Amino acid sequence: MKRTKATAALALLLPLAVACGAAPTHSGAVTEDQPLTGVEWRVVSVTAEGATHPAPASARLLLNDDGTAAGNLGCNGFSAPATLRGDHVTFGRLRTTRMACDEARMAFERLLGGLLGGHTLTAAPGHGNLTLTTRHGDHVNLTRSTTE
Image (cartoon, rainbow, N blue to C red):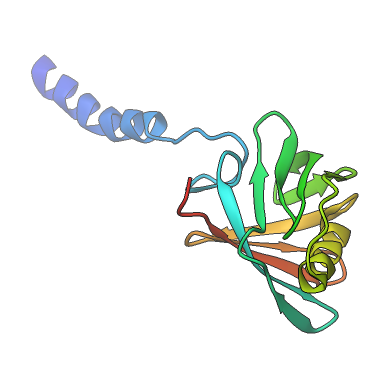
C-alpha cells in the first residue's frame, strides 16, 4: 500500500518538477528563443517615411550584454550606449568614425544613424530576423549575420 501511494505521488510530482527545471534562462532577449544580445545583425534595409532604402553590405549592429551597441552604419563604424528593457531598445548618442564614402552610403548612414541615435525602438525578433520600429512607424530590418 505504501509503495502504491509513493508511486502515485511520484507520478503526480515528476511532471511538475520537470516543468520547473526545464525553463530556459536568458539575458538580453526579447524572447527566450531569439536572443538580441551577443548576435551580429546585418542591416537589410531601412524604411522611413514610406520609402525603403536597401542597406550597404557593410551595415551591421551588435547589441552587447554590457549595455553598449556597436556596428557599422554603412560607411563608418559606431558605438553607443544601448539599454534593452522588455521589447524596447534605447540607444544613446552614437559615436562614429569619420571616413568619407560615396554619397549613397553616406545618405544611408545618415538615415540609419538618425533612427538609432538617442531613440527608443520596439524590437520584434523572429526566425533569424529582427525589426526595430520607431514610435513614428519607421523601421530597420535586420537579419542574423552568417559571419559571426
